[in-house]
Image 1 (cartoon, rainbow, N blue to C red):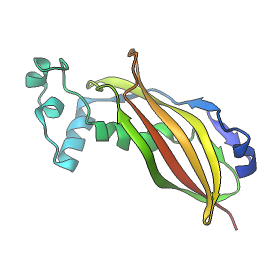
Image 2 (image 1 turned 180 degrees about the vertical axis):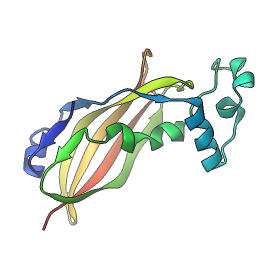
Image 3 (image 1 turned 90 degrees about the vertical axis):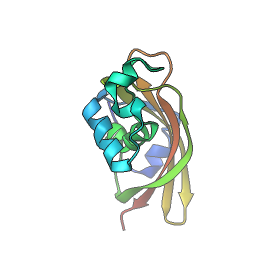
Length: 152
C-alpha cells in the first residue's frame, strides 16, 4: 500500500495518515556486510556460535543497520507529484526498542506527522516505526524529515 498525492497541498491534508510497507528479511549475510563496512564486528552481530549462548540467543542486526534500511523500507510508501526532488533532511529522534535477530523480517509503518513550508521547499515530518514480525515491541521508532523541493 502507498499514499500517492498530486502535490504538497494534498499531502498536507493527509497528516495523520498511516502507510504500511512490505516485510523485509535481515539475514546474517547483510549483518556481516554491515559489520565489515562499519568496522563494528562485535560478536553479538557476527559470531553465530558465541551469540547462540549470549543474551539474545542468536546474532542480532546492528541498530544502525536497521536505521540505515529506512530509505529501502519506506521507498514508494509516500509519493508526491510536482516535485523536482525529495532529499533526506535528517532525524528528530531515534530509539532502538528491540533487538532484530538474524533472519528476522521487519517492515516500516509511516505516519505523516507534519508538512511545513521552508525556504527551500516543504519539510515533510514522518513518524516511522520499524515493526519486527512476531514481536510485541517494534525494533525502532524514528522521527524523520524529508525536504520536498517543488518543480520549477
